[in-house]
Image (cartoon, rainbow, N blue to C red; front, top):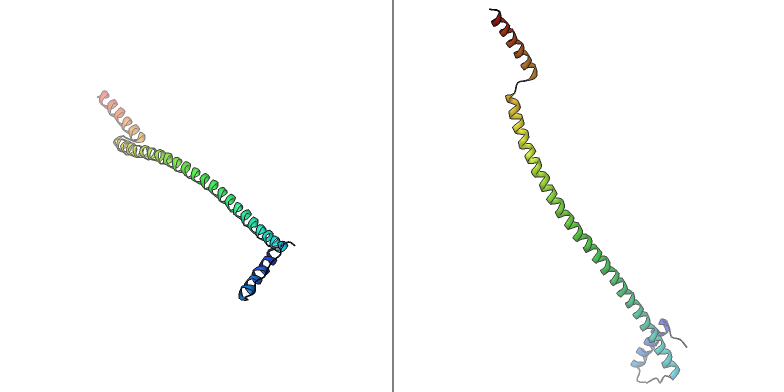
Length: 132
């Protein structure tokens, strides 16, 4: 006779009831064998579940390791981006300084239209001065 979990529960209930009584029950070798088989099956189920938990834990640890690798890689890449960004900011600052200087120099220059007008006036003045 095989003992499954229901039979095992009945056995425990029977044992509780028997412990309340002063009588002792004597089990046959077959009954004890069936009880041991039930206990053995229960232990197998527990060990299978334990192995499943250990396997799942191993998988979680592997995923965690991969996540840490990605995190280290991302931190490294972010550090390199920060260095490049600092370089770009420095170049932009230089360009802004150069633009200020160019604007200042441009203010000193004469516009082409104004230059042409002045040139025509000078030519007229030169012509007048040569003619006299």
